[in-house]
Image (cartoon, rainbow, N blue to C red; front, top):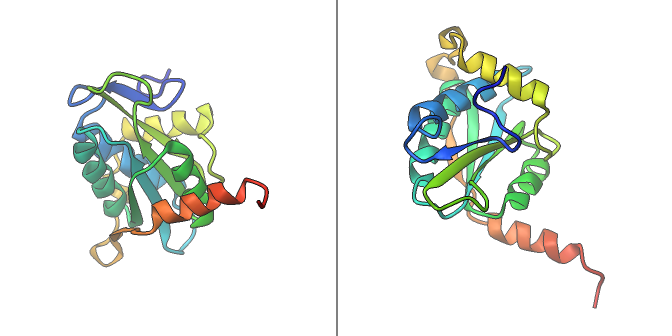
Length: 170
């Protein structure tokens, strides 16, 4: 039975379980372990909304992914569909949106997208939650294979161009 994931990711009051930095770190580690396949460099796109607690959750998630050898592309405040689009267009293995959508400002959430830009299935979320509850220390990256984090400065422009292309010319 899943305890963390609801119908749209993990949500709750910021700095209270399950929306703590510790849980975000574990989510990053477990999701990285779930989506690391093969020997290529793996990437995750992380976006967020403008909630204050995003400044706590984003670096915790980043640390989790980096510790497992996954590179992180930070796109900053963006709409949720932008993170899905950037996950696909950057050929990332995973996308993460830090937002509680329409919920009160004191809440926050973590929504995960697969490489196709779509929300993860319940089965994949259950596997990630199982990893969170297990021991991930054997999956940590060797020091030479730690991931890197960088900010994508033109993320908003890329999304704006994508949106403009959805309208007919003229």
